[in-house]
Length: 102
Length: 447
Image (cartoon, rainbow over all chains, first blue to last red):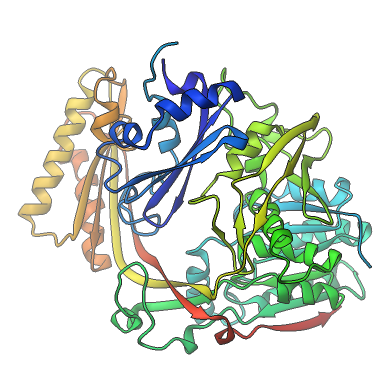
């Protein structure tokens, strides 16, 4: 099962870090997300993109996780040579993260 | 003096945003205040360069068009306007607003320019540059702008001084939304929980359509109605800072718990510590509830203290970028595009192009996320080869696009649609200054 089936995402940028929110469509799926969408899994899924540390912040009150991906934007919006210098499309890269079937 | 509920509309989420949704808000939003957020980090540096060329410019190029569209309906409805579209030149922007208001016959309209964010002349050579870990002296000759993020205080003062339109430069995005709340409710500037909720209001509204269904749609999974007529948000804020996000009835888009959650976490690091000039806000205990169609109630924001210093965003000249692109299609398209990239790479080496950094992409294959995620997908029908490089001069940068364009007659078969571009890079770096180093001023103009 892909993450897309139970959660939605949005990416933003701050300097050379990207943040990606992972939000459960249904509150009852939050615990499953918390268990399986770990910082380690995200770092592995986005290998080659995130060069630095991945930090996860939990927001159980809204059924969401916020991932901060350090050194993911190769110089940041103003300097990067990348087509998507903001890394805005990383939200969609996150959606293909594989989760265990339930 | 204090009101029960204040209605704030977001009229723009960035400098180039649509104008009709702001007009719709001005006419039908029953607003107290319409706020335009038009200033990205780099925009103010570019505006500063423009001001150097022409001292009467250096503000948002769309300011005049926006004001022509909304000043009339705002005056008619008693809606005040706050905007950071003064960019590098708030006073000139205020004069422009006065000129437009005169043309519209809006006698007595009061406009305030809030200045003081420009701190370039006050920074010493020892100022620490966050991004490099070095000092300002190392990049000083290339710095074109330095603007402190100012808070809601001087903007609220302008509203209390009777301004119908408040124009400023590098106020924080959240501050331009907090100002009408501080003014209307008389919040104390050390009431951290309320200021934290005010920052939350600003954070939720600052990207305008991004909370009413813009940047949300994913057909079949997350559908949004009528995006071509997307309505911009209204925040109905109570005296304690809790709010309902809604929009004009009949406008496009949607306000749901899901659209609000995505915006709540947009560009957020640690949700317990969201830094604004006036408060360190805490979004970690926020809760949302849908209380009707396109109505989401948001509660639980807070704040604790404020930063000792103010952040300063500096723009500096950081070399040049040259780019070229060309497309290939049909059977063998990807192989021909890869050959095109290899040819340009070799040409740049053979001709001694001086590039500090280069990048070779196949748009449609690996340009956005690289090999790791796109490796096993089937070959596309068409693909665009993209070469981009960082150089020290405009002349060197122009060689990149020229080499790509030359693939027409010297490269693989069937290349089409070549484009080339050269642009100067204005990098952004930051430093922090003591609050007392930033002195703001409010100047009033009257029609």
